[in-house]
Image (cartoon, rainbow, N blue to C red; front, side, top):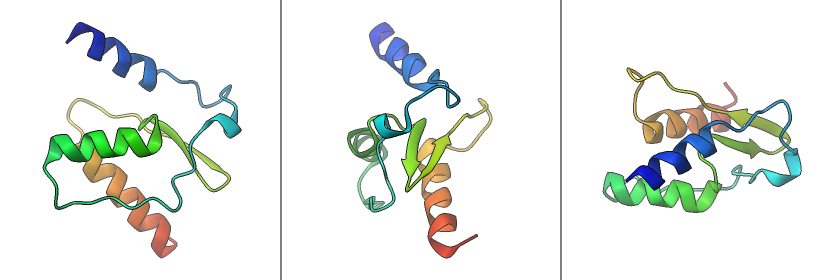
Length: 88
C-alpha cells in the first residue's frame, strides 16, 4: 500500500512546465469502457495513459490536479474528454 501511494505521488508530481511533451501519451483517440467496475476502469486509464495526471491530447499537454473533495478521476477525465470531443 505504501509503495502504491508513493507511485501515485510520483505520477501526480510531474511538472507540466518541464516535462518533455513527446514523453507524454497522446490520449486523443483513447476510448474508455464505463461499463466495467471502478477498479478495472482505473487500471484501464493507467494502462492507456501511463500517467492519468499528466498526458497529451494532440499537441495540448494536460495536467490534472484534484482536491480531496473533488469528484473521482474517472468522472473528471471522462467529462474532460467529452468536452474536448464536442469542442467546448
